[in-house]
Image (cartoon, rainbow, N blue to C red):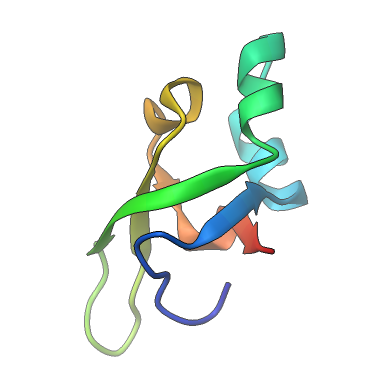
Length: 73
């Protein structure tokens, strides 16, 4: 996801996200297929934003997620 993510946007974990998180619980894997963004914060700077996101799935929201780890659908 190269643009700023939007609150309410539906996303799922992409291959890069799975590589980074190494999910092991069935619940986390299931939740990673359909999430809604509930918060967005730029952890980078204006020229090179790194969009940290919060999601509505508790098993995934405990991780520091960023927009490059998810794809919208």
